[in-house]
Amino acid sequence: MSLHETDSIVSLDILYGTQRGWLQGWLWRSLGCSQQAADLVQDTFVRLLVRGQPISARAPRALLVRIARGLVIDHWRRDALERAYLEALAQLPEASHPSPEVRHEALQCLERIAQLLEGLKPAVREAFLLYQLGDMSHAQVAQTLGVSSRTVERHVASALLHCYRVCFEGSQ
Image 1 (cartoon, rainbow, N blue to C red):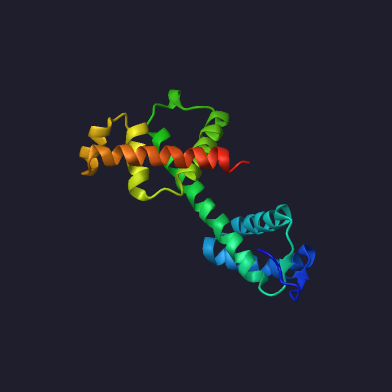
Image 2 (tube, rainbow, N blue to C red):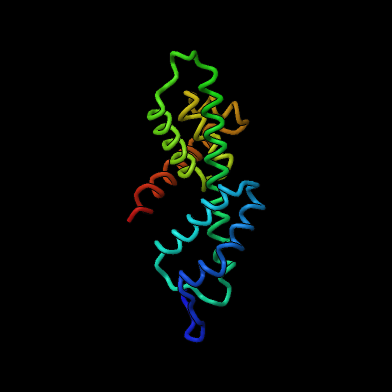
């Protein structure tokens, strides 16, 4: 986002001082937890700091909401992943439960996979996951989804290309 010459900019410390309370209230209404809201307020301002771009004084709340909304979505996704992972662990015998360190690493991997698959269309994601994780052939995935085997091949190839781009082209 480029600023027009006539736009005034606001410093991050002024923005923090004037908008932190408002943003925390907005996040609290979204999350229902004051501690999580406070954490995401800090994360929002850290994102602005790392971004290193001038902040227009014209609509700073819109920028804060856009960043905070993305963080809330990430929070909900992580929470859902963690619940699903813990539910799966509960099905295992207690002796098979991994250490807290391994659980933490597994959750981080699951979060990264979710981020990789985030931009895919639902049909493409489902075909890809059935093929990669469901130990199914293209024909089996096609039968399960009610599409042609060629469609599954295209979906899987599209998903692989998407993941490649996210991993390698996005990091440059």
